Image (cartoon, rainbow, N blue to C red; front, side, top):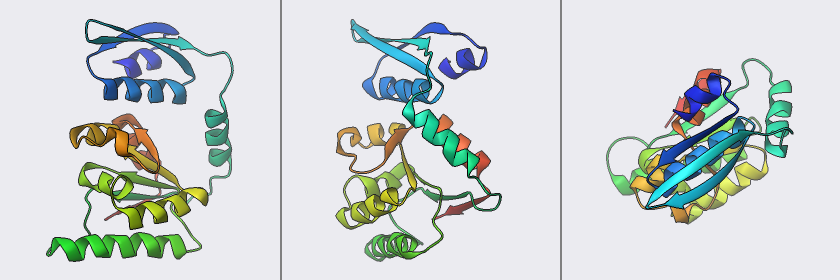
Length: 184
């Protein structure tokens, strides 16, 4: 609903939601679209007020610069939708995914974005080896986005160690603008 109002060029509006993860998703959406937010809670309902900001914030400026440096064929997105790699033994699959992420970190050519969904969010919340590798990738400029709905579903919203909470709009945007999507 908020995205539709933004697309309709609305500059001031309020969205009502009943849970904190939805509030965080709306705040992130607002920030990426140049809106300020104000949140009020009343009777277990959150009122998220959107208003268009006058200035472009630092994150938007950074995103603009990364788009300016964009070279066709180099926008790779790594899509991690589970906490194992391959089919078969779960312990082996977890180890393979850890080794894969470590191998990605050792490459000169890195993905622009790593998207983590479903049980894949565990790599950014509870797997200490992967968290260290993901932090190293983030320091090298790789954007790490972790599904907020998934974090909420697994009860891990407060356990995110690396990356940013994202919405399905963020995920869709990255996937549709990727030159290459690598799904693990």
